[in-house]
Image 1 (spheres, one colour):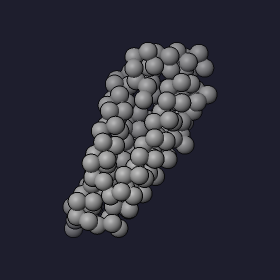
Image 2: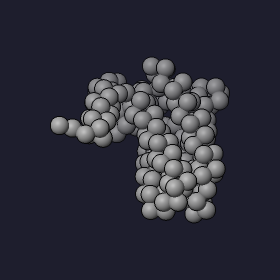
Image 3: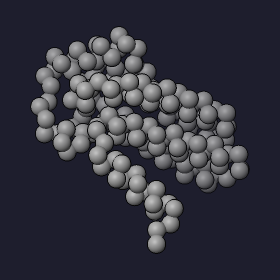
Length: 165
């Protein structure tokens, strides 16, 4: 019989298997937020090892997100996201070093704000077409890839709507 953690892992895996590329990005943000909450709990429990493990997992997600940015496609929006990920990485390291639950909570709020912006993007059917290939689902990989002009138009539009970090 499966324990509760195995059930949750199985549920997450099934949920993500049908997700769009943008939904996968949102899931990564959710993961970073979840690990930062674990770090906050560890700080409150004075569990240095637990804090370090949770922070490392959150930092791994931020590095993954940053590594998948495509400035050649996303332009200024990709640059802004890169700057955001770098800032969150640095602030997370500093908050962990100081074992500051308050600073970790502020980082969670910042990441949640950008996550919410991705939720707005998720409602745009054209948005999934400009994601890097490795962040697209199998079905999305085989749809037509937009021209560079479409990608530039989306980047300009997303910046004008205030989606940039």
